[in-house]
Length: 513
Image (cartoon, rainbow, N blue to C red; front, top):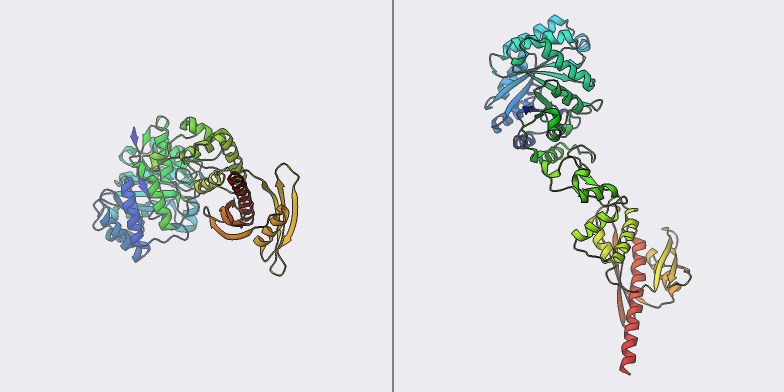
């Protein structure tokens, strides 16, 4: 199995993401975690960019012990000196020198001819060799450079004794077949190419960074360059976790793998997201919140029967505990039953059907149904009280300059619905007055409380009421994402409890006569 070296540039190219500015402490925290992840090479920054960046690179260089620490440099002696200063104290230092080679960069940015570009790069490499035994050289915008000139530049770098030659797709322009062909061409046309490692550095402007990097590996690349979570300039860089898991999952296809500690992927992703402030999209491959989550009933059923039906890799591999069966409106009875069993509820078939129907009703109102939601939903009906009255519909009108009005429709047993309308001091008072008119019951509201069952703006609200009638009290609970509906449900539930208690007391009185 061919080893692919991992060059991490989260602290350099990743920090160039718009809005990201890591201080030295944050860079050190990420560096320690990258060391745990097991990367081979760490580009800690661009020392010539600022005194602060130089100091941060130096702090990282002194801190990590099992990683090659790299500083970026333009093909200028001033930059090389800055890297030299920044890497003092590093156990395994390396300098990364770059120079643009494409026609558009030569003409508009460098204002150089081909021979001037080659001479400038060669001079920088010779100066760097005085101080560094490990040098990586990058042909900036190699993806848009003529193949014959690229061969000439790489041949020069090989002759100067560099260890790694990087062929970046700097602007994410190429497709996999084009990028892979470049590596194949260099392998076939550069003398002594086996003396250096070829590296792939891809940007994601057209969404092909991972595919291009994998194509480079298939065509002889020895090293990949990328960032955690794929952060970086513009649309970002190749996501290291995607390459690592692609090679791990498809070993028989690629015949290569990294030496990363894969179980640290999730932890590393979370840390980088936290410190950079760049949120990982839910649908992001490998580390997104939904990467190992399933809501579709068909998928959940397959997962419960055999996980490999819908998962090609395990969440445990990247350091997560388990997959998530997300309960929502697409979930099926199988997943719902398994969730209830996990939560300690064993319902018979009728109870399960009733609970599942209420769950579906709730799922239509909420994006995701939490464990707390399910617990409240099930326990709301654990006390099997006959429903004399059932709330069917409720309408409320309210304005801060008008009297609240409520209209309810109550079903009594098998009878036709009873509709009544009433006003009140507030919306809840209006609802309760309307229910009293519809049922004809005279009760006193002794207690009313409300709490949130779960989190978020679409959280379920649970209302608890106590009704009293002739010294007999009964409690009622109501649950809904609409707090007015929950209030009405609780009131009707308490009425049913009150009627059941009334029957019980009547039986006791007759028995005592």
